[in-house]
Length: 435
Image 1 (spheres, rainbow, N blue to C red):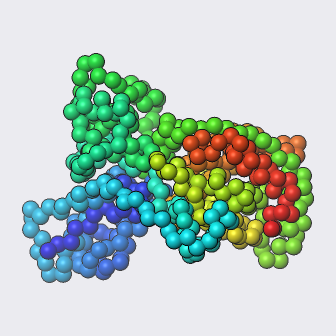
Image 2 (tube, one colour):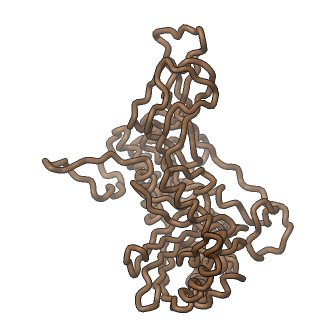
Image 3 (spheres, rainbow, N blue to C red):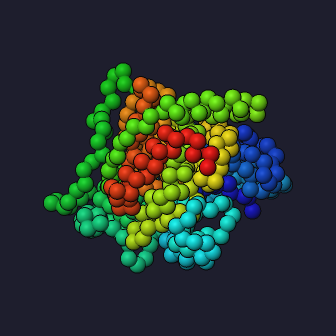
């Protein structure tokens, strides 16, 4: 039998990939593990390997095509095998699986203490942040392509979404929700209906159409196809802004002591080729502040809060076509030289499109620093399922403004203020960063 090569799921959040390059051509001999193609995912450019030995018989996917996970992209013929002229590869059915509730981990340490190191037993009531995922592809493409298996039983949905689905005759079980814990919201129904072109009954409720859709393309305009990364950013941040109740806290930190202290430390580290950046100090300050306030190192989980055992800091890195948030894992238990070296490696891998899923999936808190662009103050959108993100501006007249965006379901005003105050405290007394 010929071997069907399907678009693989190269990261936990990947629902489709764009074929960036074919590295093999029809007629080329292949062995299991040979790299056949490169695929651009929502996070990075990754390699597709041959799934069997043989000859590349047919290439189906064209370079630049966006294909759902499970879609055939090539056919491999075994040596000496004649592939029938009418042979058609079969797509893999994509099924949305409901995750079983997590069983509490055995308690082996005092609750509420400092973040534990990787590999240590999980604490009771705490979970690995990599187990939480952002929104999956909404119903649109999957229902329209017939690639979603209808779910049985109760489906979580808002009352408005239920009314809209009923008016259009859409089964809620076939719609992937982008709300908290996969809850179907009005936009998901609207998106699904647009793809399969089901009109709404007269008088039925409607969600607002997405803003910014042009009625027509005019002469001189240029249309640029969205990359998988840009699609993922748009979907996740739209969901975050619509469904996460943000509030904002702003403080400024005096950076005079931090800059002087950093200069002295860099002199000592110069022989080792290490040079600390201001961003390294901020990462360490946030990690220690979250260790001091473990209730803020948490995530909303529908009917529960998840308190993370590790302090894993996601740091926004700008790359061509978007941004990614590589993670400095267990940052509360790493010194500044280790954080600095790791961050440089992660940023380099991000810009080269070589990050691995474990390097960007998860995280318990995010930092977005636009100070190097001269931005003095801004507010960032929370990166779900995390509960907070710190927006860092430029240092002006010795002071640096920071705005903490907070998910009010997880962190109340007093706790958010204490967390931000702790971050400021570490930056203003930088010798504590070595604690």
